[in-house]
Image (cartoon, rainbow, N blue to C red):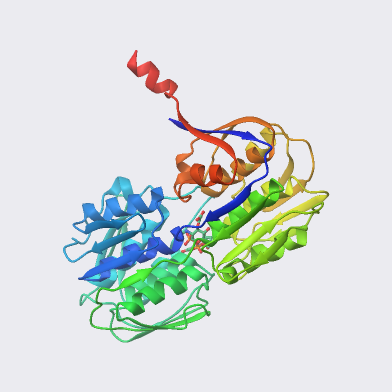
Length: 430
Ligand code: EPU
């Protein structure tokens, strides 16, 4: 079992380079299934969810070669439909993109029901509604989702989503990009990763317009060809370092970012009193005076991202006054709160509303990373408290943060990763 050990209480200072966006890389990697050719993908983050996705695709017959630290060549020419490993697929949410990708390429799909962080019920009814509207029939059987079409192709149509959903928007794009006719998605999600995936597909010869707005038009093409494509920087990784710098009263430059994608995060940090300076592809975050409370409501892009809610909460425990976060995307993204309370934080959760009393003294403690963003929030809190905190279950943080320990160390954090034998393993060895 690996742990992160942090001696907190030091401001983060220096420069940190942001990796490629996990949530854009996932659909793009699975979109390669649609292409019977080589795709060179650049700016790929070295995180667990991506490496597991490579394992899934390799197991299906894909050839994936590492070109350099952040570049891979993916060739899915020989991928076999329905052959993804059940146990790997069910461990990550992003694997649901295999449904759309298999359906788009083969006119059918068979994939295990997806996993992912536990935020309460995470239905995929809108994905299924989309596939059915495209003329497919969908059944669930023995933990698998099975999709088929009559003539081996999806059929273009108009789809109106009942809610704004990133996953279903992308899945319908994947399923219809080589379908017959034209598909129009209304009430589409507008996240930068939707645009990135559409740009990738268009670089492969797809005809997608409107990505980034709430109406996306996909005109089916016969086939896609390979291309070279660079993934956009990870706005959530960037936002997490911005919150960590503010919480530790540091001064950092976050490089390889698209400042436009960070606007909602920047605006909230400025409201709190943090100084944020924008450059072409970098942002500097510093704290020169006292910070004050604020209210946050998570919303689909361009609103404040739910994936920044726990990190913002960790920051708000350090500022004057009472702050409120309203979580409007997930029913239960609050498991991290118990860990912050373990450190002494005064936080109340009522329904989807989190009330944070700031500047209550907090102390280092043994902590658990309960999920990806909850884990990084707990780590941010540990960085703010003097004393030694140990964080377990760090594989959950490593699902989405490239070299988290190395990057924080380079910003002056006293942090290391250690291996400790699991008590269960010790028992077995005896
Ligand atoms: N929803 C439904 N039915 C559906 C699909 C979604 O009810 O068929 C609901 C969800 O339960 C949720 C809301 O709609 O309440 C939004 O879900 P969405 O489909 O947008 O989320 P997702 O595709 O499952 C992606 C990211 C999440 C991020 C959300 C929202 C990936 C792999 N995951 O999930 O990222 O929170 O969009 O922006 O891209 C993370 O990175 O920590 C993470 C959880």
